[in-house]
Amino acid sequence: MMTQTNVFAHRGVSSQFPENTMAAFGAAVNVGADGIEFDVQLSKDDVPVVIHDHTLDRTTTGSGLVRSHTVKELKELSAGEWFHPDFKNEQIPTLTEVFIWAKHHSLLLNIELKGDVRERELISSTVLSLIVQFGLVDRVILSSFDHTIIHLIQQKMPQVETAVIVMAALHEPAFYLKRIGAPGYHFCSPLLLKTEAQDLMRKGIRLRPYTVNDREWMREYMDWGCDGIFTDYPKEALIIREERERA
Image (tube, rainbow, N blue to C red; front, side, top):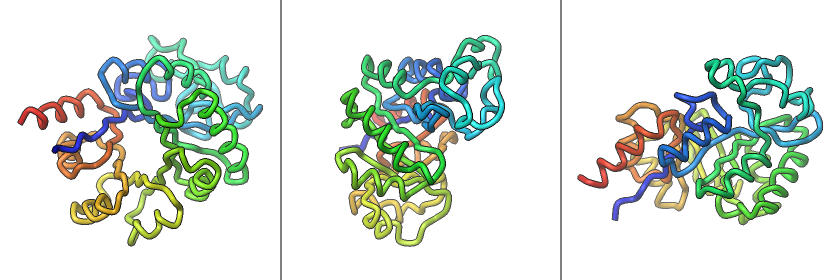
């Protein structure tokens, strides 16, 4: 039986909508994506908010550190005007707002945790509490470049799926992942050979490459049987998946 690779809309449909906004997430539902990927960090008043950069300058009308602003201050900014004037009313979502919205859909939710390494305990506890509150344990994947926080989450709540994110080709990643306790390996595309990928998948590791915007690589990773791909172009990936299933 052919493995169906899940298509995650990277920061929502970020090729056509401002990233990490409700507009981009709604577009992911509309194109039929299996999941969305988005970034979470804490505001000044310790509220998890959805934004990629540690600073506001690139994707909002504000400036300075996200962590230096309260939710009230963050909500006064436009998170879409930088992309196109049509999206000037888009705000920075809170994680709670995304979870409330997600309860009405069936999307998988890949949350990339960001923030100061000195605040691992705070952000992990805050996010896990919300996941439990909204009953989303079975639909969430928590990932991070900070592998220590992933290990911490595995110890706190092993029933929540986790994944490490890497930008380099690790030597013997299966051993590394076993020590951390995370089943997911999110690698920068292309950093794995097919033989390496097959070996990892035989060991139960869930491979999800990022950010896969090239059609040939989309097809390649589906052929490998990867658990998922992260892409800015989920509609194109879904078309390729459908073509493969019909072939």
